[in-house]
Every structure is written in C-alpha cells, then in structure tokens.
Amino acid sequence: MQLPDVWIYKGKAYDLTDWISKHPGGEFFIGRTKNRDITSIIGSYHKNPERIDRMLKRYALNRDATPEDIHPTANAPEFLFKPGFESWTDTPSYNFDDKKDLLHQIKARIQEPVLAARIKKMDKIFNVVVGMLIVAYFGVQALRLAEPSWMPLPAFVIAMVLLRSGLAGFGHYAIHRAQKGMTKIYANFFDANYVALAFVTADGHALLHHPHTQSEVDIKKNVFTFMMRIPRLYRIPIHTLHKFGHVLTGMTLRLLDVCRLTRKVGIKDMYGTWRGALPHFIGAFGMRFLLVGELVVFTVMGDFWAWALQFVVSLWLSTFLVVSSHDFDTDEPEHVETEDWAINQLEQAYDLKVVGNRYIDCFLSAGLSSHRVHHVLPFQRSGFANIATEDAVREESAKYGVEWLPAKSFLTDRFPKLCRTYLLSPSRDAQERNWGFIREHFSPSALKTSAQYTVQGFTGIGTV
Image (cartoon, rainbow, N blue to C red):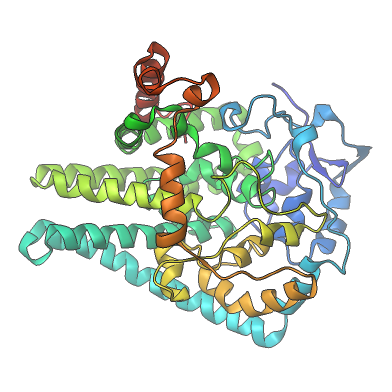
C-alpha cells in the first residue's frame, strides 16, 4: 500500500520526512509514526508540547488530514489487531491543549528545581544498579558452568529469573528514552526475559500501548491472548515450545524480515540515515546472538537442563508480570473514560509489589512497581525517577478526584487470577463454539492451531 508522506497531528496533515534525522528523541520514533495520528504521542512524551506545535508549523501541508493519509493498521502488522480495526476511526482523541488538566499540573511539578534535581540523581543511581546487574548476570552463568557445586541448580534458576526480570526492566526504560546512540543497543535488554523482541515491540509498546492504553490501538491487550487459541491442557507446553522456537530461530528470522522491509520502504523513511539505523540492528542481532549463545554453551557444557529450567520459569513468570499491571484479563475495564488523558492513564494501570520495597520491586517487576507514574510520564528515564515523582503525582491526582489505590501484590493478587484466565480457561474456539473438553482438545482445528502456533515460534512470522 503506497501512502503519502503524512503524519496527522490535531486533525491536520504534516510531512515530517525532513525531521526524521533531526528529531532529538531519535529517528525511530518519527520514522515509525508516518501515516499515524501522533497527537497523543506528542502530548504525552514531550514536557512542552506547545513548543512542538510551533516547530511543526514549518512542516505543515496546510490542509486537514483525510482517511487516505492514515494506515489502516497504524503501519503495524494486521495480525496484532482485532478484526475490523481501522486507525482512522479507532484511534482515540484527547485534548492536550487544556493547561488546567492533570497532565499539565504534573509536568509543572516535576520541573520544580528540587524535584528535577532528585529525578536526575535517581536516574544515575538506577544506571549504577543496572551495571551491577549486568556483571551479576554474566557472573552467575560463569560460576554455574565453571563450578556447579558453588551455584546449585535452585540458586542458579532463582538468580537467573531475578536478573532477567531486572535487565528486562532496564530495557523497558531504555525503550522509553530518546533512541539515540548506545540507547538503541541498550533497549534490547527488553528481550532478556524471553517474552518479546524489543526491535519490533518497542513500537507497539512505546508508541501504541502507552499513548492509547486499553483502546483498540493498544496491541498489548491482544498480543498476550494469542496463546488462548491453544486448548488449555496443551497451552503451557505448546506456548513454551513456541517461545523456545523464538529463541532458537524465530526472532532472528523475524529480524531478517524487518531488514528486508526496511530496505523495501527505504532507510530514509525509517531512520533518516544508515548511521541512525545501525545501532538498532546491531543491538537486536547482538541480543539474539547472546540468547542463542547461552543455550549453545550450556548444551555443549552438558548443563542443558539448567538452562531449560531457568528458561521456562523466566518465561512464564515474566509473561504474567507483563500482563499483571492492566486489566487485560477482564472483559470490561473498571474505569470510566474521560477526556483527560492523564486521568485515563492513572485509572487504567496498577502499581505492583513483589516484596514490598519499591526500589527492589522496580527490578523484580521489570520496572512496574511505580507503573501509574510511568504511564502518565512515559518519558522519564528510570523506575527510580518514577518512584521519586510518585508523591507529586499522587498529590496532584487527588485534586482531580483520582483515588490512589495501594499497589497490588503480584504473588497473592494478580498471579492467581492470571493463572485462572490464561492457563485454565477453555480455548477461544471452545468458548465461541460451546465445545466440551474432549472436542476442545481433539478436534482437527484444535490440533491444527496447536501445530501452526508451534511452527510460528520457529519461523517468527505472524508472531512477536
């Protein structure tokens, strides 16, 4: 589909092609949003959207946007959306011009000198902790391979699960930082827990999920229900095998496909220049090489089952963590939609606790301990900055009648509910066709779906 070089902002058409390589937040964010409505992205990710308004005038096409300007599935693969999705009609619209809304009040608070200085300090501390986690990550594996008696299997599995969650949390925040220089490489730590491919989900997470949470544009609420196509007794082994396929070959093949598409579209439209593209590609292929390399080394060293056990536990705990901070497991959200974007964000996200210390939980929960602050201020660079900001956000929210609920326990609250939803519920076909247990598991279509899902893991096409 050949579409015009158009970006939609507040109902108007703009051509930002020449801005791709100049964008302070990195070329990726502009390149990926061509033929999308970027109103919510600009309003939420910039501290001063009014200044962006003035800058955009030089790229205005001086006309209203039309349905022909916008890609029907937001320039993302069609399989990520529900049937019948149309970007033009299904992208929610918010007014970010009201300086009395909650978002403006919160942004004013975080620019106060004392709080701004504390945020910078917490970002630095966060980065130091990440450096320690990286050293520990390689140290634990080296110790297990060199002296298994010093790193027994239970200790190894627990350590790797915690470290993978922590490093995925770092990758989570790296995705939200300006995509420039080494940050494009660091963002691939998002892959450390085996759940996703940062190279493609950075777009779906930062640019589709955050600005449009729980709307039809939010692909996150669809992606993690793919396993629900599988009959319930097969779900754990089939999804585990599917993700093993991702690690072994699938995500590398998916990356090669993205390279092909990037070449077809043109590097200028995606990244501005090859110099802007290379760190993303280097980081993405480097992380795939690391994850496959670990599997190969542990297999050669005769310790495959240690790798396999930490893989399975990391995968499933991390998958549940990812979906535990929103109401993706319920049919109807509990909140009431408002025109105030920040209020919607706060009411559609949970804070999580694992051990009860927010700084430790920041890493144990892959960065989600201060999840509500993260959703209303997605541009902040670290989980520690979100913790430092929480008091200000809570105080301002109270003025708008937003109740600040205590963090939900992952272990005692969310995990049991998610197990019932994702592991014990009948498959989609069984629910839609009112099938019994036997037909759910042994009908030809159920067996075919399970086989296709397994193959998709190893090919990487049609999956994340």
